[in-house]
Length: 327
Image 1 (tube, rainbow, N blue to C red):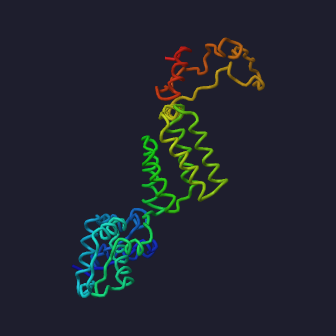
Image 2: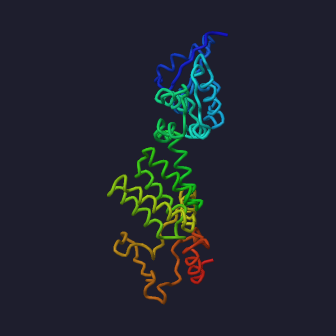
Image 3: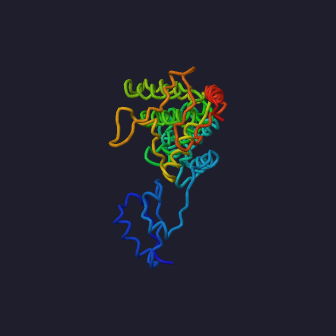
């Protein structure tokens, strides 16, 4: 085996620096081991990743962190085995869970606790829950606003709203805001969701979402979080329908892949008359008829795109369309 080259935080190497390693990896001069907290498919050159095995390391479980803390306290060479330490089980459990699977964070908190806590008269350092909470101060939210933490959390947020779970949705909202996510980004996603996943099942949904976006821009944080919470819970508990979105997708596909239909003569702008064309006055003005409706063709080749669901207000729309003769 050749020389083992370990590069920590390999994503900090620019593309040219990473390319320098490639020939030595290819001829076996070095066995490259690169570590990164970033997505390697985005931050490591493709020639390097294509010649590598990518292993994803997951956060430690609370049980693993607890075992790590026990080992640090017992180790006389690299830990605190020479000290008399009494670690309260509740405090250990709290630290094991609060560090989000980050062993270094847990060990750092333990070090702060040991060094800042004076021993009792019998020489014992007692690490209580109050001591650990004081050392940790607050939960550190693991959230990278440019990578997986950002996309995974917003995905969980949107899917919770779509799935009509206001409790989960508010939790993910809180996580994003505490971590410093741009509230305008969250509000924009709610506006999209209001049309994509709620639509005409509750037409007020888009109004609430847009109002929340305006509130975020007008009020700003931290108070804007209140408007975001209101919009989130409203949209999460609203009836759901994606039929408007489905209608557009089908029509979009037909326009892109099929023959584009010309505008029927009776629907053309009466104020614009093509040279040599005869003006067609066959358009029937709906308001001149009972219930503001008259049977009339609006496509040369009729096609049904919008199929209202039986959810919320869209059920009323479906009944009205049926009464007008739509299948």
